[in-house]
Length: 208
Image (tube, rainbow, N blue to C red; front, side, top):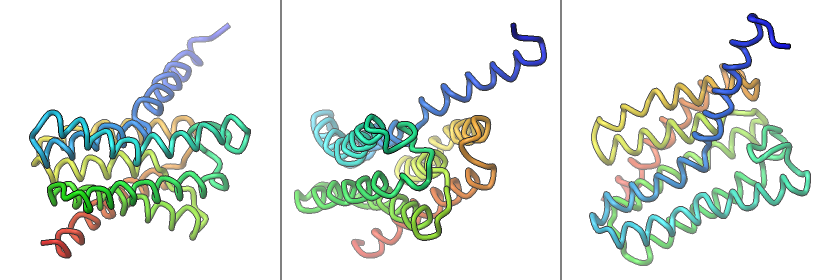
C-alpha cells in the first residue's frame, strides 16, 4: 500500500512518463514539418503535401526503424535509452532527413523551407557525432525540443518562445525517470539551440 511519502513521488513519475511520451523527438518532428511548410507556402494543400513528405522522411521512417528494432529486442524501448543502440536510429534519421531536404531543393520549394530543414539536419548530425563519436548519451528529447523551438522562433518571430516551458518539462521528465542526468539534458538543450540556429544560418549564407 502506498504511503503519504511515496504518493508524490509516484505522481511525479506518472507526469514525467506522460511528458516523455507526449514531447518525444518524433512528436516534434511530426509537427515541425507542417509549420515549415505553412511558412513557405501559406497554402493548405501544399502545406499538407510537403508537411507529410517531411514528416515521413524526418519522423515516420526513423520511428519505424526504432519500433522494429525494439520489437526484436535490439533496443530497451522506443526511446532507445541504451546509448549503444542509438547509432542505427540516429543515422537512419539523419539520412532520411537529408533525403527530405534534397527533395525540397530539387522540386523548387520555397527557400525558407530548405533553411529550416537544414536546421533539423544539423541537430541530427551533431547528435550523431556526440552520441557515437564522443560516446556520450546526450538527451535527444532535449535537443529535438529546443531545436524545434529555435527554428519556430526564427521562422515565426518571438511568440513560439512561449513553448519554452515544454522544453523545460521534457528535460525534467528525462531526469525524473533517470533516463538522463541533468548535465545530459542541459547539453541537449544547448545542442538543439546552437545546431538548429547554425544549420539555418549556414544555409542562409550559402543560399542567400
